[in-house]
Length: 305
Length: 256
Ligand SMILES: Cc1cc2nc3c(=O)[nH]c(=O)nc-3n(C[C@H](O)[C@H](O)[C@H](O)COP(=O)(O)OP(=O)(O)OC[C@H]3O[C@@H](n4cnc5c(N)ncnc54)[C@H](O)[C@@H]3O)c2cc1C
Ligand SMILES: Cc1cc2nc3c(=O)[nH]c(=O)nc-3n(C[C@H](O)[C@H](O)[C@H](O)COP(=O)(O)O)c2cc1C
Ligand code: FES
Image (cartoon, rainbow over all chains, first blue to last red; front, side, top):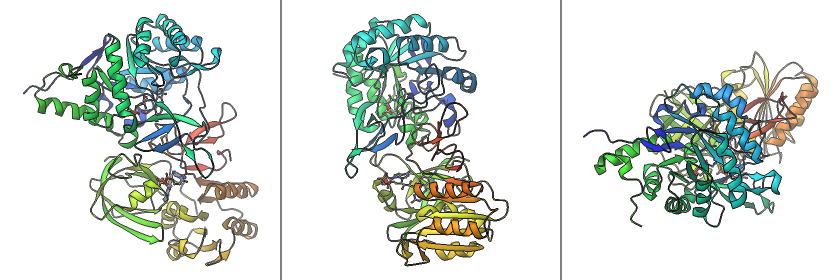
């Protein structure tokens, strides 16, 4: 039998397979190149970037939870300029797509970030993290307030000619509704889900474990919630959806694809098994072969629901 | 050769109450670790506990890796349950090693910190002056072996059940005053002890290397979860990754 086709198309972005890395769990790619050949991936999504560098939150920043973890890294990053000068040349060596995740604490910063990244050689698409608070409007999180969300996406849309993926926050009442707002504001695709806000208390200290008090929950613990939300998003919009949340192996990834996601991202699993994303690609191939399916696109969105 | 491999559990026995020594034999060729480097060990078969746990390489010989660990919470309890013959996932060696000492040096450790310094003592047999503190005699693990590897050794316990009763850092101060004025200091142990060791070294103008601990998710520099506040050339401070820029730091770099 001919090897099955794994290639997918996300708003004009051609991926050799539907597997990406989730932002913030894969550094800038370098860290993992000791463990597997990055050429195996559909895309590398890098750690969230802001215009200037950020030092991030005080420690402790992470704590393990049942089948998951909370993180409050505080978006520590090296800034767009250093990324372009020092990290991008390394990523350009690989035949995989590079997706730059970015954020800001004002609409202007999002716009500036999107512009700078769009001009850089070797960035193939942008992923916009809107789970950040807006400094100008009382620190309301962009991605949880429909009005602010619409404004910031509209502005970023004008600032870039690259495919623009908007990463949705799960900390909202109706994620399908939020996806529609992203779609009408000009997003080429949406990705979901970002982490779910959580908290762990040290009962002896009677204080939160994380210095930031709360953090974002990720890992297998959030997978059923993520699958449900991705399914809702897929029904709400026509633009492609990238699904993520607790994917540990190919079987988990298939849940998202069957729910309607055109691609998936592997996040926390990279921490446990450095080759996790690559293993998911292999696992998908094997699944198609054993099921006798010749093209991954025949699986996408086939959920009987 | 890969930094991510499967290893067979050769032994996983108690070294003292609440302390175990696990011996692993990598099933494929593995890299040779240096003193101060660490490994991430699988914490069990299921997703709970989820993350691997970091452990300093205690000893390395003829292809087998040994880790000396204290059973603390869910992860180490799960690791303590591994049986002879089990295959587990391991990532390493990781992080920066201790700089090779050039002649004599002082090694300061509290509790299970000996796990990190032991191979340094072994590699530099007869060159160390050891200061080793623990809660009690039973927790002075590998005391005799460590003593034999060192030119001189001082032991302290909280309860006086072995060595002198008192703090290992007091012993260190006393020794430096009398005869340790030109030796570098290598230290691994609880954070408050390290802070004190760093201060003593600074007062006496001695080079000092400390091995730090932080909670880790990935161990390979990707998550930024394991950082410590350090001096920075830009701004007042920056965060450095214990797993990548450390775990061994020049004590001068750290903002205590
Ligand atoms: C580079 C490095 C090398 C290490 N080497 C050794 C070693 O050789 N032998 C050994 O016994 N231990 C070592 N540790 C510490 C060991 O990793 C932790 O004790 C272990 O991860 C605890 O896991 P747990 O699930 O059992 O405990 P948890 O349930 O996670 O925690 C139990 C207690 O330990 C604390 N704790 C958890 N993780 C850490 C950590 N990384 N640093 C400090 N405190 C922590 C928690 O706050 C809690 O109070 C090392 C840590 C690092 C970072
Ligand atoms: C340590 C850590 C850092 C993260 N940093 C970012 C980030 O910078 N930008 C972003 O959009 N998402 C970030 N995320 C969210 C992930 O990309 C992903 O959406 C989420 O973790 C769910 O997937 P998972 O369960 O597979 O990890 C981070 C997640 C973790 C665990
Ligand atoms: S443990 Fe992930 S960066 Fe150090």
